Amino acid sequence: MARVKVRFFATYRDLAGVRELEVEVPDNTTVLTLAKLLEEKFPKLKGRLIEGDRIREETKVLVNGRNIEWLDKENTKVSDGDTVAFFPPAAGG
Image (tube, rainbow, N blue to C red; front, side, top):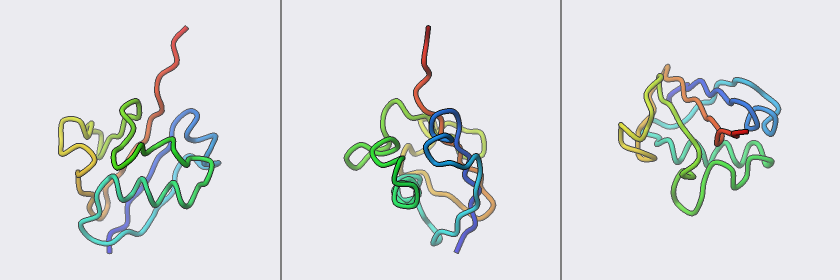
């Protein structure tokens, strides 16, 4: 098992009702599996992190400060001690 720190920003933080939490996940868990777990744990996030079998295109996810777009996208694996940050789409105006 791996303990992963999760951080939510902006509207995701508001919907989840927490800024940060630690979750325990099986070894070799992917960002997509973690996002599914978070959507189950926080029903108000349902459909905000995942679209079909992918992380929503507008959602930015960083693992230890690195954008998953430059890693293995939603198949990026998380390890014990990692920090995963979820950022909603940026609102302009």
